[in-house]
Length: 274
Image: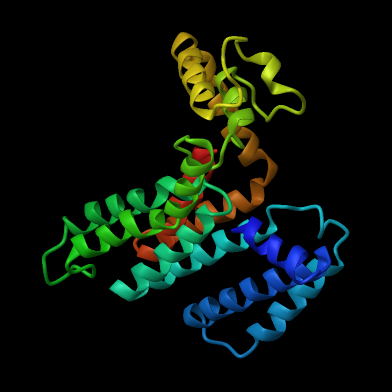
């Protein structure tokens, strides 16, 4: 998706990079503002969104931060998830699934979250009586969560098959450097030629072979892998200790509400999947 937008902006319209990113972020801010109004009705969100967009555009890191659009898409999906939890409906489930599907066209970390959310809701609803269940019938919501986000990946997978004759559903090798780092027990990503760390017999241009090599490496050194996994979690938590503390307190205080509970699940999932 980012490639298509960039191609239109630069090749067809001749727009500069700053104008392109500003337009994309403005659209995402409008969507986030709509979700914010749904969660907390207020007339102040346009001014706040405009101030945020202006601050981002004036930032010296505005043009060199490639994850900015993805961060907004994750926020959009999180907001729709909380909004959906307040009044469960098929429309809310569909909107959330569309947001997750769009995010998968930028980056893939949320790829396992919709089935996890469906499992969480199944565990929650099976403990209630039919009169108490907010997700009725449950299977319709689960079907949307487990199908709609992945429809976005079909054109990408087909293009890769036609052009490369390879089954590439997510990033085509973009995650290989982190896969290798994790398999070797490293805490952070590799800055440099990561292919030198892999067995020479492995075709590093083939993500499947890299993943298979990583699986073999983990199976030979499981304790090393688990230790590095724990170190990465500690690294994430240690960088924002106050933020994590406040989030944990908030989650515990409102853990009986579906919205905060699912937001906590998303935060935990995001840390663990990385």
